[in-house]
Length: 364
Image 1 (cartoon, rainbow, N blue to C red):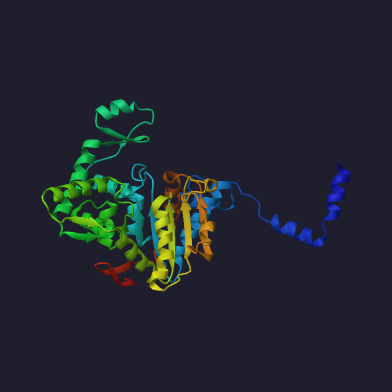
Image 2 (image 1 turned 120 degrees about the vertical axis):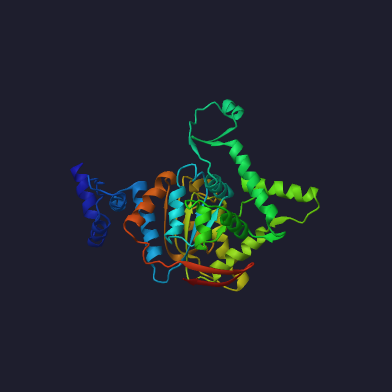
């Protein structure tokens, strides 16, 4: 055995020895938690740890860089998954309020569940082992280990449809319709209300595939019966509007919580820049928190490195991914940014819309 070791050592020339020394220059450090430690300290300590802990730090570091870039890129927040049921409502609301993000792209379910809570209804602690047949008899809906009141869901569906009843008939983007809903809410803890007050656009490209779509279908049915024109959501107008936010930005950055339609939509908005004769070069910063994995070939788990081949992520971008479920990973990364105050120097983006035309995008 000693002879084998000696033979191996002899094969390494000075150049390779120097390379080996450089590669083995940074030891893994133990994660240290003290009585006085904050969450930001914990995330900072992940820097020289391993596996997903290190990836959590890398995502937090990308977030820090996008917020401290002097050019102040437009930051897009993509939201998918059961985030409101998971208790992330306040964190997402604060990311909007504290100017950490400028544009939100969400599934309809997340926006709907925020509205459900804004109207005074709640999510409740449940169990994945519940007897769903009993829950069905009691009009209780289950989201894994969380319960909601189906009667209150129905009430909220109907409220959304009735809001549409009061609006001027015509085509609206999801941004316009969600803003209208936000104007009718009074809950200061609401994501939708806060975005409305701050002028942060919310795009909901999969709006039909949610209870918002159910409410609007009720509106459509009433209009059909009474031969009225009604309100219609124009999904292509959504494309047109979000692409303008991309091409009018000097730089862009993206945060993907889970994946799904919002991830693809934010990235496709970059590709659609060619419609306006502009190649933006892709997002300059991006990070994703997901449990989906790349090897199945689906978009939700596809790497941001792969997105570079499509021109969606810049060749020189700072990006990272952590394969950690968002109810755990997002609070960690948000706390790091919040407690270290990395967001403080950012200004609010001001979007001035004239129907489907973005007249002005500037730092307020």
